[in-house]
Length: 223
Image (cartoon, rainbow, N blue to C red):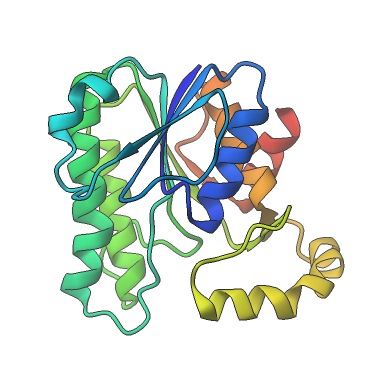
């Protein structure tokens, strides 16, 4: 398969990229971002786009792909709702609107979050916006859309979050992860499992569109 990856430099994106490069059935990965991925590998090509709201001029480079793994995301902490909606919903849909025209058979996998509000009416701002994004993606016209809602994610293989607060949380929680994984196996996952689960979702459609941590881990085991 040929994969487009948004967010290859983030914690989740790094894990997904690692699994894509290791997978025998992944022929090519196009890493799209405001800067290069920093990874050198025969399978990977970087597409640097300074304004991700405007990917249409790069249509030739974005055509001919089987899947898009959309791993871009920001913390809502300290953000106004309008600003968070712009970089979460509006950016995602701007990219999706271009990709669905270029690759109508594409499988689009979106990293959302545990607790997302699909009703779009809840009190939590970030959950409402994520819900709006999920619902719009399901109407976008892709062959398949999968909405991954991981809970706590353990970064593996030296991968680190770019958000200082998250780095601190992960550093503190790392020694506890084996215990937490035994106590709450359906609420935790890893960057490795996320990557493997995304690939499995493309290989074995259709599955349920909303995939929580338990489903992510199950898909990862299937490979």
